[in-house]
Length: 347
Image (tube, rainbow, N blue to C red; front, side):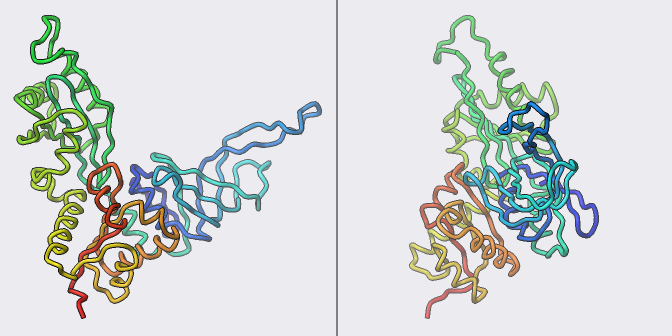
C-alpha cells in the first residue's frame, strides 16, 4: 500500500492489491472521515431540461463514514456515509453517498486518533518483495505476479511451435520476445523473476532476458510443466518454500503444513474454524493465524474485522490467503481459519 502522512490525523493511501483493501476495511471505522474523488448526478435547472435527467460530474468530497463493507469478495471496498464537505456548491451537505474503492484508487483517511494496530496495517505490505513467476516450455508460457499471498495471472502465451518438431518458420526468439513484453507489463521495481519449466527452455529464456536488461532472476529446476499448471505446481513445491522462505505465501504454507503434522499426531496445539480460534485468542494462546475470504463470507463482517484487529494487537502473526492459490483453497476447506498455538489446550 502506498501511503503518505499529511499530519497526525490525515493519511493518504493507495491500495495496490486485495490484501491492501482488506487492511483498509480493518482500518476505516464509523465516524472516520474519508476524502476522495467521485462522481455524482446533479439535476439540471435549465428551463427545458427533463426533470428525470441529470449531469454526472466529478467532484471531491469528504464523507463521514457510516458503513463500510467488502464488495465482491476482496476486489472492491464500499464506503458509505454522509457528505460533510464538497468541491461543488450544488452538492448538498448532509446527503448520503458511497465511495467504491478499487485497486490503485487514492483516498485520504482522517481520524481523531490513529491506533497503533491501524498504523501497523498501513505499513504491513510496505517493502514487501514480490515475484514474477514464469512457467515456460517450447509450446507455451504461464506468467503470474505473486505479491503477499495473492497470485495475479496473465493469459497463457502460446509459441505456435506445433509440437516438438518445429515448423521451419518457427523462431523461439520471437516467442521469447512476446513473453518478455508480457513480463514487462506487470514487472515492478524490486520484483524478482523466477523461471521454471521442463527442459532447457527456461535457461535459454533467462539468458535472453539478461542480454536485454539486468534483472533479478532465479532459474528453478524440478518443475516439469509450463503454462498455468506449472505456476500452480511451483506454488505447491518445496522449492518455493526454499527460495521464497521470507515471502508471506511460504510462511502461510509452512503454518498449514505444520498444522497437518499436528493433526496427524492428534495434538491440540492448533485450531480450525472460527469458534475454536476465537476461544484460543481469548486466553492469548494463538501464536500465528491464517485465514481465507470464506471466514468473512460466512460470518458477520464487522465481527471478523474486530476479531482480526484484536488478534493483531496481541502480537499474533496473521496471514490472509485467497482462492488464487492452493494454500487459500486448503484454508477454505479447513473452515476458513486456522491457527498454531503457543501451547496445547488439552485439559
